Image (cartoon, rainbow, N blue to C red; front, side, top):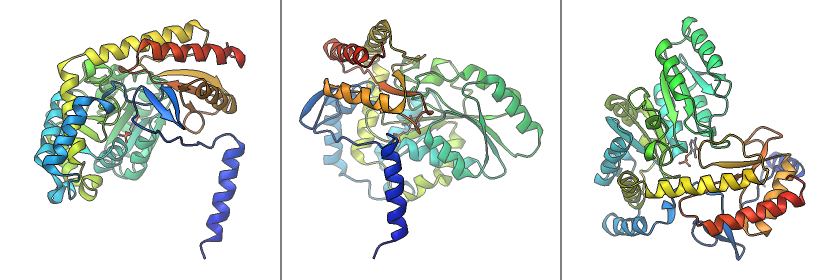
Length: 396
Ligand SMILES: *Cc1c(COP(=O)(O)O)cnc(C)c1O
């Protein structure tokens, strides 16, 4: 017999989510996650993936990944600190440091895992973390895991941050104080006010941790939000993911040599979870070379973003204040948002609705992620569908 308590808990809560329109159905893709995808036998324009530069399906990367499997096998065989560190892991980390302009870097198995690892390796119960209220779930969980006091500040509100930084440092209660922020906020596409954050950090001697999952490969000629603002030597932790613009999987922190040395002996997923696979590592290293060698993919991505935004705005949609390719179309009500997304699907466009709890209640949106790999024809197809459905549902 399995647990009756568990059955009751699951049934009650699942039904509740479904009745509120908050239950997320997962649609498996029948093929690669490129600019066009197939779901349920239907071809759709894909505006939902984080594959900014189209690298997830890049032929050059597929080729080197297959070579890596032939040479090294499919698995790393152990955690990094036993004997799962292959020479290609070291090369990837050197490449990441070069990419970010730092002394060193450490790679993890995912971005999520990286935030869980790095924050708690440095912060403990005698410390405090000033955290933007819209920070990613992995930052929130990483902060919780550290047991440091979490002090949330209002989203990108520098007066609030300054006041809370002053209070935390002057209280004398904490050994160390960190400020942590997304570089690019993934739901709205706005960019953190890093110059002001760094200024406040200097004033109060705070550590600065920037999670640039959505900025790397996108801003700063590819190097990310920190580089975009020219602050590479003022941010202690430049965290990023290898799964978005880089197109593969994994996460990393780039920073000073001693920070990376510390993370290599103290961050638990590095010590207790098997290393990235050879194919992932080699694909990531080569993706970084592609990004550093040419801005062609980024130029295409920005051109496609400008085009999509201009057209959707022109039609009268509320596309928020995004400064990056992330293009939200804010609908508001959760059920209306899900309905809009469902209608897009019927019209051959895959753009996912994002609702509470991922975003605050009443700010449901359909989020569009234009990439370097889209053609104008694909985007036009999406824009036509938006116009039709927007009129049909009385949104424009
Ligand atoms: C996606 C994301 C992560 C997690 O990265 P993964 O590599 O997908 O685990 C972490 N932080 C932010 C801000 C993200 O957007």
